[in-house]
Image (cartoon, rainbow over all chains, first blue to last red):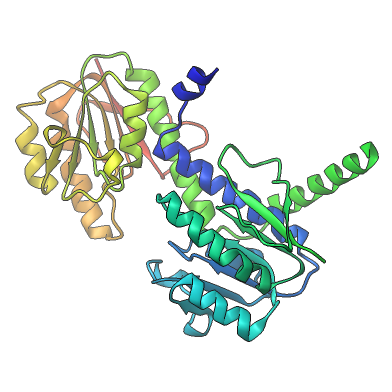
Length: 172
Length: 187
C-alpha cells in the first residue's frame, strides 16, 4: 500500500492542479456559507493574484483587502493602495487587528512556502491575529493549519482532492 | 443525525449548483483550465508515442512543471530542454547535459544534426504576451523542428504552427479549441 502511494506520487504539474482546484472548491464553498454574513474579505498572501481575482468575482459588492510582503501579481489584480497592506504579515495583521478588530466575514490565508519550519512559526504567529479579525461565524480558509481558541475546524467540501487545505469558523 | 446529514448534503448540492452557474471566469479558473489542458495534451501524446524509442524536447522550461510531468510520464526517455535561462524550481531543472541554453533561433538549428529524426515528442510552450514575437517564433519553430522529428512524432504547442509532413491530431476533449495544438508526423 505504501509502495502504491509512493509510485503514484504526483509531479509538480499534478500538485499545482490539485492545489488550485482545492483553493477554488474551498473558496466557492466558504463564499456560500458566509453569504448572509456582512463583513470585509481579506486575502493574506496576494501572490500571483489568482485567488484574489476569484474572491473579487465571488464578492463583487464587498470590500477586499490584500496583505503581502511585496507585490508580484499582474497589475490588473493588484488592489489600490488603500486595499493593499504591504509588509510582514505579523506586523500588518497586528496593525489591522488593532485598528479594526473583528471586521472580516472571510479570510483566505495562503502563506505556505517550501520551508515547513518557517511556515509553522508563521502560522503560529498569525493565527491569533487572524482570529481577532474574524467576525463571529466568519470563516478562514488556509493552506496551513491554524490554531487559536476561537477557531473551530470545519470539514472541507466534498469536491476537494488530496491537497491539504483547512477551513475554520470563528466561534459565535 | 441521519436526517440532518441528508439535508445538509442537499443544501450543499444546491450551493454547488448555484456556483456552477456563476457568471465570472477568474484568473484562478483560467490557470486551472490551462494547467489541465497541458496535462491532458501531454498525457494524450504520451499514450501515442510513450513506447517509441527516441528523445523528448521541451521548448521553454518555465518553472519546470511540465518538464516534471514529462519526466514522470516518460521515465525511460531522455528529455532535452531549451530555454533562454533557467528560472525553474531546482527539483525540476535538468542537468547541464540536458539543458540547452540560448535563443531558440540559434539553439534549434544547432541541434538539428544531433537530433536528426530521433525526436518522438516535442512540448513547446514558448508563447509570451507579445503577439508579434509569438508570430515570429511560430513561423520559425515548426520548420526548425521538422528535420529532428522521428516518423510518428507528436508535437504539442501553445502556438499554432505548421510543420511539413505533419497533420493535426484531435485534442483531448477537455482542451478548449485554440488553446493548444497537436501535430503528428506521418509515417
